[in-house]
Image (cartoon, rainbow, N blue to C red; front, side):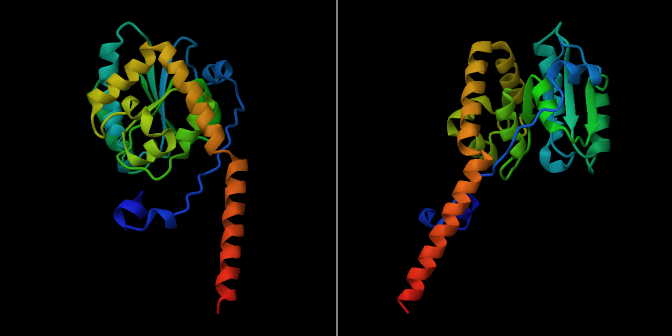
Length: 231
């Protein structure tokens, strides 16, 4: 997108090779929740991203506060997994101001992202900008419903037709509405999960990465030979 829209490079000259991502689960859902002291009936909303200003956890925290009002009487918890970068102190203060500090869990960096994604109910990425977010692909492969910011990075991974399930960047109310919609409409959510997993397996597998890379290198070498042959 940046090359074509910003740098104005001809689309025909841009060759896109998508990331290849694997989804590995080392601890099953029930055991993971037991280990981390979450109840099996808890609704867990999670975001995997370092706590930097670019990921806009502030919008997510404000959105989570709205979600609690929309889903009264339900045990909902927010899991924030990621390195404690420069935004960590302000986020903990905001959680306290919103009176949600007891149900927001700052988990720090984690090695087993796959098991976390397998254990949560909604995966969120509230960033204001993204390149090509692997965590969204991992969420697709894990079969967890996804929402987040309606930005180029997420739309590229999920597809343009997923736009209705994403929120305007920096809009906590809209993000809360999208999240609650996914929680309340099980049949729609299940169909999205199936579609997302199929898309991820089709476009973002390691085999696909290897094949596309091999094809690109082979094509480049052949083109180079033709050019050299004309001199």
